[in-house]
Length: 443
Image (cartoon, rainbow, N blue to C red):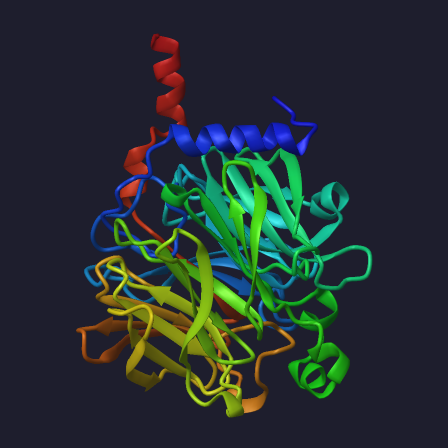
């Protein structure tokens, strides 16, 4: 195993990896995956993997990976076909595929554990094969949030730190086997606040874009308490950072007030822009190169009524870069914006899709949309508004029509959060373990 003792050595590797691999042409899949993820789904997905937060007294109370059959031709369509408990409750949040799509990394914001699931051996039955618990020890960061595939590597964006549990944090780099390589601090100079949340890469432009949120002390408190605490409300990120991907060095800090969350690059070939939504100010921001090639950031649209704090959370861009889905947690609405002119997005559709909604994923062909409900255990609504679900919708370009629902509370699965799509075809992309051994013996 090669170990990198210095960040420069790692940067050199990322440089080589970034320039040595062609970005694959995506034929089908989710639109939010890293451009380095291969083995993409072509056509109808078979599964939705849901990373669910454990709830005390509900089932075994642990976080779990839930697999739902979403192929309309299947007898178990819209049903849970497997659940894998990790044996602990650590605020399950986001997940991401390795570049070869053999493994799915999923982590917890409270205990900072990262669970690795094998999905290639049997895509309908993910198997827990590794748990990494050294993030805090190796980096001083806690709250792993985003898992983003690089060639042979996984870049993990954290939300907080071990020193004061505030928002100053950084990123950790692992190889696909789970070996820690190095870390990168979020900038605190040049206008940087040191905060982190999401990250997304545009290899053709050699840029990495990061956003910002808040630290452990805020996201582990109830939302009501945070909103009523003036000091706590000051501890939210207000920046996005543009990095040199090959050198892994920050190049420019943008002022983006109001906690910019998910980042989505336009996937249309030749486009040079990305969008993000701010949770607290309810704006869509555009990060784009100007005519001189300089990167600029500006707010270009308003989501709902900012005075009512609809709380934009997840967004999903269409594959042609001409449309954007936006979920707002507090009012339970899903909105669609026309991005034909990214300088001036226009809302063309909205629908109440739940009493609270968070994550949204769409199929590559744009005909299917999946929505989950949970934001954070301490931020979810209470009482009858505390819906916990995965809902599937069909989209014909004019209307969202719900086609199935999995009630996570009724089925004692917990709180439904992040999603990824799976396919039976992935199993044929890799030889079974027994076949691999036989091939090796025959050589």
